[in-house]
Image (cartoon, rainbow, N blue to C red; front, side, top):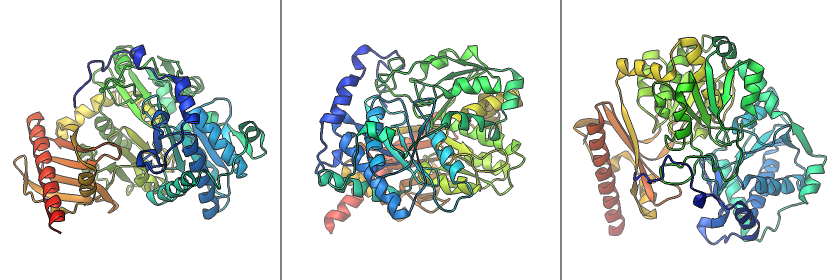
Length: 555
């Protein structure tokens, strides 16, 4: 990964998005449904793209929203739809477009009361709260956000009645229906004027802010944080939680300082990410440079991304914790201290998350539930209460209430931040110190993700490999123990391969948006061993793709 010379530095004015031009592109440009790059595409977190690229424009949102309305009718989802949005520039126009369609379809919509923005976890929490003990008239939701993506991006994701990300079957149906609307010039899309939609009898207000914040003590020991009087620092990164943190501090009596209160759709206050782009990623040491520089002022500090579904934890001794380190510390703490959680409650992780989690689970005598990449694979377990914690290496996580009940079924960037404060208050050690203690007992892994070039044809082959396609017995001098193309936890395809040895592993997965594949690798034997794994991984994947190409040509 080549790091841009500007990484970690304040954003230069020359790279700031021209918001009026972006919004004009949203309304003025029409997507070409014959161009795959301009069609509706639902990835792991909904449809995303820039209006400048004709990938996130008015016609996309009108079509997707009508498709969601049609899906609701098909599934007899007759309760309210909880609608939230973040602070990206395209979220406001997308909100207006969605409201025009929802009102025209007579959908009861729950809009935020008292604050303009709504974090992803607050929407999930609201859906679950409404649907609790209901068997009919169920609610669902939409969150308008591209998460931590750059300022010129927009995003639109659907949450069914389970409150979490929609599964592939649902998103493919919505995607197909929306693209039909695009191809047919929006024929079949119902629409009313935005002003009329806001006045419609089906438009209601819901207090996401006080409802979510008021319930936090059911998932976090807020009293322990208050009584410890530890100094907390938080950077909302200009995101949807901007009004949530002050209320937490006021309601629960925290010593909490918000280090940045700005909301600006250019995100000019950010330090730029590794590639020279502005990206509100709380797990990036480049994007988090400002908060890292303030670490000595606080006992614990943290940040969440734009829709507050990811977390970043900063400690005095460790600086910004890598997500895998913090996930391991969370699991160790939660399963050692949540006494009301049942003994058969499991730990959820994605196949590309650290094997340190495996070792922590083994010591805790807890079952590990390993799934493909994407938080949607955790929804069933969190909803059913048999997954106590679910986390992914990209800094997304959620976990059960203190009594073992469901909290959210989508990623929650707020509660992992507050858990870092609880750990510091109750354990007398911050999460970085907890993790260092784990490494003394269980080993000290090094982990990295790198990218390698791949054609669309090669990506398609990589996604559909079987273990028999991988001709390898050793990796970096160690015998291969397992080759996976499906996740051990749920048996679903991982969309690539994972090769495991005793002290290291690698996984390779194609990118959904770029002509690359991603290699994730980890070693418990040090940096040199990790480099060997990465080099051999690229060789193994290249040789496998070449064999597949020759076999296809022979046919």
